[in-house]
Each structure stands twice: as C-alpha cells, then as structure tokens.
Image (cartoon, rainbow, N blue to C red; front, side):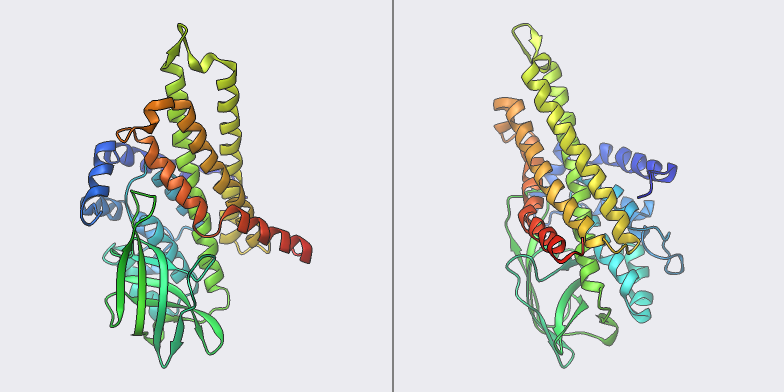
Amino acid sequence: MQLSTSEHEELRATCRKLLSRNATSERIREVSNSPTGEDDAFWKQIADLGWTTITIPEEYEGIGQGLVELAILAEEFGRSLQPSPIVPSSVATWVIQRHGTEGLRSQLLPQLASAEAIATWGLQGPGDNGPLTISSGRISGRRLYVPEAHRASHLAVDAQLDGKRVLAVVDTNGEGVTIERQHTLDLTRRYFAVAFDSTPITGDGLILSDDAHSDLFRAGVVLQCAESVGIARRLLDMTVDYVSTRRQFDRPIGSFQAIKHRIADMYIQLEGSVVATEEAAWAVEHRRSDADVSVHVAKSWTGRSASAIASDSLQLHGGIAFTWEHDLHLFLRRAKVNELLLGTPAWHDEQLFRALAAGTA
C-alpha cells in the first residue's frame, strides 16, 4: 500500500474546501427535499475542477489517476454528505476505462469526462436482484437499489450471455427501460429500481472481460467503504466538539472517564477503517492476487465500524441528536444503508471464511 502523497493531500484539501462552502446543512436539506434531488450548479463546479476525469486516460481528456484517488474523493463526499452522482458515476467510469472496448471508451469516456454524461451501475448480488439475460442483442430483467439512476445516461450491469457472465453498458434512454424510485432510510441519496424489457445493446456496449463484473463489485465496495470512513470521521469530530462544550456538574462531559473511553473506542474503529479501505483500494487498482480478500476485510470492518460510530455518536449527543433539526441522523442513515448494501459485513465474513477454508486467503 502506498502512503499518502502531496498530490493526494492537495486533492483532499481542495475537495474539503469546496464542500465546506457548498455542503451546508441548509443546502443539503434543500437539495435532498427537492423534487429531483439535483444540484446542477454544484455538478458544474465538479466538472470544472476535473473531478469527473480522475480515472479517465489522458487520450480521452482525463488525468489518468486511479481508484486510490477516487477513494479520497468518496471519503470527502461522505464526510460532507453532499448529494451528488459523482461516486456511483466514478465507479462505472473506472470500470469502463479498465475493461471497455475501444469503441465504447472513445465514445463514452470523453462525455463522462466533460460531465455531459453521467453513469451508474447495478449488480445481481448480494441482495434480491435476479439475473439479467441478453438474447439477440437485447437485455431483459431488473436491478434494484441503483444509485442516482434518474440522473444517469448510462448504466453498467452484469448479465448472462450464452451461459457466461458479462458486463453491459446500457443507454437509460433506450427502448424498454423503466426507472422507478425506491425509498430507503437514506435521505440524501436516491435509489431506483431499473427494469429492462428487451432493451437493445450495441456491440460496443458489451464488455466480455471475465473480470469486469468482479472489478465493478470490488470498486463499488471500496468507494462505499471510503464514503463510510468520511461519515465516521465527521461523526467523531461532531461528537468530540459536543462533549467538549456540553457541561454537567460544572465541567465538560468529555472530561468524564466513561465518555473518554467511548471516544477512544470510536477513534480505534475509525483508524481501522481507514487502513482497511486504503489497502483494499490499492489492491484492486493494482490487480493484486489478494484483492478480493482485501475488499472483504474492508467491508467487514468498515461496515460495522461506521454504523457503530454513528450509534455511539447518537448516544453521546443525548436527546438533541434525536431531533429532526439536528444533522446527525442524516449521517447515521447513510452509515446504516452503506452497512447493508453491497453485502452485509456478515456476508463478507462468510466469503473470507470460504477463502481461508479453500487456502486462497
């Protein structure tokens, strides 16, 4: 695993500075409660800063970085809870530039780089999604809990073609595509059920690489973990600030030993999540043989830790955190949803056990 570089710190600082100005409590609630959940002005700022180009090669108008840099971006967006399709679109973009055909890359990557196009993705499992099937160049089936599908022009999904699992990039404006809102615990990100009824796929839209669907899942979990790290970091900061100012018996409650121990436990959980997520991002980006194991470890630890930190933060804030007006519940909701989607920590534990039993971990 590579240690953080000056370029990484500059990216983090720039991202945090912009988000601190834009992602105010009032603005987040305003966008989240709007009919579309969209912030077009902020999306233009993202494009102007080049964040949509991070993993796109230079020949397609990108800057040629990788999953490690995307993880930094995802962490900061998690920390701010800014509503935006940048994280799901970045996952799909990363997979398309890594596995897509030359025709698909030359056609779609420049559009994604300029933010004229937005991508998202959905996979069969783990979860309640059934298989998608491709026959005679047309795809049929359904994907659940697809993030920001209402804004996406293209959707990357796995499907069965002649008994082989492939990846397809589908135009969401194509024939037979139906997008329906799904309401979840998370109020700041929108999820959708996307159904395909004999939707046509062009030849360039098929990605036949054996590892493409696995890489899509790995990248999705890594950026989800990075986002959860940002949420946990923000909640820890909020809690430390609160217990340092809230007073009982003429002293800050943070001076009580029981509170100190809870804060210390939260910090340990956070730091473990940081290390596990950074390791997973590096392993996936560099195609290491233990990439799957690293991803399972990251989700097993981070999924539990972010959720536990959110719960502890709620308890340490006391009654004020239960009010609708306080922002803490918004972060708790995202942490809980992230814990369950893309495989629960228990599911990832099971995959780790199977790898150990098979001698591949």
